[in-house]
Length: 466
Image (cartoon, one colour):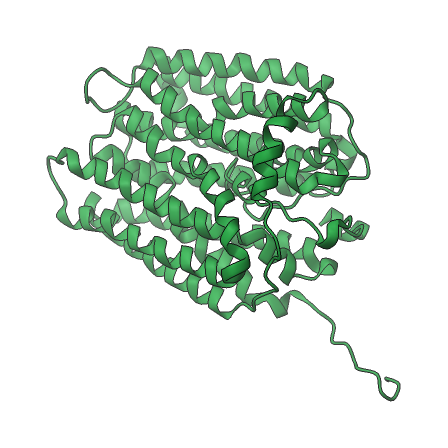
């Protein structure tokens, strides 16, 4: 019953936001193929060296400055128009790998590999132009009262989409010839991209930002990175974790495919297990991270990575009996990375000053992301064979894994020296956190600030736990 002259307020639920949830589901079908394991497998088929694999994989991180600069145009075009432009334009770059798949070269020409690299660059570039609008648009669109449930649902749907896509990829490689499989997969990615853009077109826009923080980021970035305190210490901590971990995922796929001769279908099944591990870890921590504590969650991640790297050291070292346990190795990798992601999203706001939290989160994410982009390129130069031979030196790869183990052990002990930070800080949310280890950092580069510099309202305990 309502009083005269008063308006009845309709309750808001997730049913009112089916379009952004549909976008997350269909978008996963394109990036997991265009930037993930299938892309690495196609590059390996074209004779890519370890350096070329690292270069193609790094573009998502190296183009983070484009994402920051692209925020300048948001006041002019708005969130919806700019994101639709970026997402629609990147579809074009999926047609080159589709063309290569139709050509089905028995002996690939050098231009094919470099054409694939350029197409991945273009895909990532247009993605960066649109990505700067994602988080501000979602935060402006989804009411705070259901934001926690929205992100939890989006993460679940994205995880389901990723796993289904990888299972489809694996089944395709088992049922068809190699290049026919790539034809089906890239056509599938193009259809998924079109459906994702269609979902974006159904989403309502929100008011455009009046100003941009690019100038503030450029001015403050060098200062906040060198100022003594908890922020700088945690920045070094995450850079050390990032330069080793981001390079591991593409190289282990390339090693299994080229050095070990493992078929693409099996590798894609194992990659699906990595995402199952990530989803399992996030589900386990969903209501337990407050009881476990951030420090213990960090250490569980680092010790889990040590066990995972020890397993892979045995595989690269020639212990063929471990090959039967590859699904466990991939699952453990995803599990450990989900723990690191959960702890990072909880801890980062605590060491960012409240009066400029959005800016410092952006600076932290940009620096960590850029270092994560440079790392695969440099490691690729170290691991590759001389000349243009595909694959990588097993001895050097084993050394890389050993150095990664030492780094993880060091971080596990160093985490106790991180400052407690602001206990009142609200944890971050990122829709990509579960399914894209470290790629969710791209969302944090354009961190959301509240209007007029006001602090965000405290969410309910139910929403935070969700």
